[in-house]
Every structure is written in C-alpha cells, then in structure tokens.
Image (cartoon, rainbow, N blue to C red; front, side, top):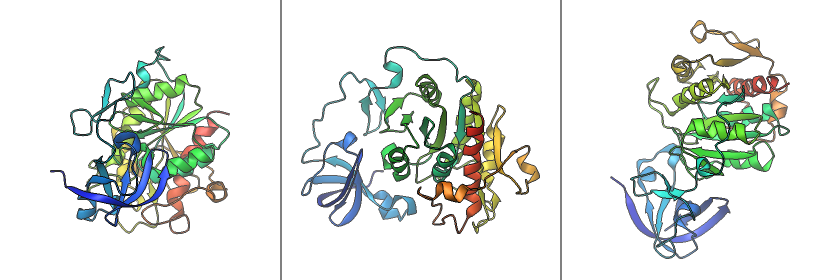
Length: 328
C-alpha cells in the first residue's frame, strides 16, 4: 500500500539538477522535477510519507508524488517510448541510449569496471582513478533508484572525477538511460570512457542475510563485465569499526558477491592487511596516500568517516588504484 498525504509546500531549501529539497507542512521532502515537474512555494502536492512514518534511517524524508498545482498533464519527452518503472503508478517514457543512431561496440575490450557493493565506496574509488581519466558511473538497482539523489555523484561530477552518470534498468534520472547494465557498460566503452564505477545508489536495501542485500548487484555488474570482455574489479567491503560481526573484517556481503561472480574477478586488497582464507586470491595494492587523495571528497559510511574506519575507505581506494594501474 502507498502511504500518501496531501499537503502544501511550506519551504524550498535547495534546487539542484534533478533534485529539489523542500518542506511540505514543515516535514522534509524531496522532489524530482524531471519526473513530477517544477515545484514552488505554496504548491498543493501529494507526498509519499511511508519511509518517514516507518522511521527508516536512510529515508528520513517524504517524497513528492504529484504536484496538483503545476504537475498535471505533463507531456512525455519528445520521441520517447521506452518506459522507466513500467506498469507502476510512476511509469514514464524517456529516451534510452540504445534507441540512438548506431549500435556501438559489442564488447568492452578489457575496459576496467570497478564493482562496488555500497554507494559510500564510490568516492574513494574515484579518488584513486583521478580526475584526469574519463570515468563513468553506472548506478545499479539495490538502493535508491534516482541517480540525482546522490550528493556524492554530484560532487564527483563537479570536481571532474566523473564524466557521466548512467541509469540502467529500473534506476532513473541519470545523464543517460539504458535498458540494461550490459548496455550501459557498452555505452561507456563506445563513448571512450577509460574506466567505469558501478554501485547501488544511496539508501541501500539490507537485511541480516548474506544474499538479501542490495550489494549483491556488484556480482551482477561483474558478470556482465566478464561476459562482454571487460575487466571486473571488486571493491571489498572491509571494516575495523563496524560493531556487527557479519561486517567486521571482510563483510559477508563481499563474500556473497565473490560467490555469485561467475567469471574471473580481480579482488583489490590493501597491501599488508591479512587476507582471510574465505576470500581467496587477491591482488595486493599499495594504498599509501589515500587520505590525501580523498581529503576533498565526501567520505562517510554508517556515520563513520576516515578517522573512525580507515580500512573501509582504503579498501575502496585500492580497487580504484588497481583499475588505474591497468591503464598504464
């Protein structure tokens, strides 16, 4: 059941590309203007309140569902006919890259693809790749679906670490839409990207189980990369600061991603850190200087920063550095 409530926009605090932060009757809310149209102070709206009502930590805001004042009878994108979120109340047609002229390459030609299980790994991976490379971000399902929700991706774009953000499958609101992750990877290869970073969006879906976690999408990206002749690199989730046994050391979600990867996947590992036997073969990477390289980027995971859990960020940095080494 949808939990919808009618209200009035009482504040507009921030307008970003693809995202507006506002308040509806004093409650925090986000709106996606490319989906529901423009929004202004005083508009009468309907918001989805369920996440906030349930007290979800990663969904601590309402989401604008429809703007009754200026969001009705909006036209579809010209020439669009492929639906995002099809057969749901939010279905809408957008142009997909596969519809454009030319089919592009049919293989990745060794393209390095870093596969992350958490959105908080994206910034340190990109820091290691560096702003001088052409890097694309492909958002996987398993967390937030709108790419535009990510402040991290926005910051990385502004500072030159990312050239494009792609929304494949059920994800929405990227620079480019693709029907599948495989098509998104081929689009990256066809547009001259040096490397790709794949990750679920912020606000990941998680349970206490090994497989019931959005992060297993890292294995799906790795499998597509392998099948298309790319080089998949897994960014392991390591932690010395997590109080939960299943995430301390190497997370059970990393082990699940390794188990689900059908092709040869290169696992980056910070040099000098003991490797648990269940991880298998890894490639040790010198991560010296990672703190300085990441200093100007947003680093946070489960409320912890680099000082509280350096292993987490160093491990992600190792994956980016391994990917860069393949381009030398």
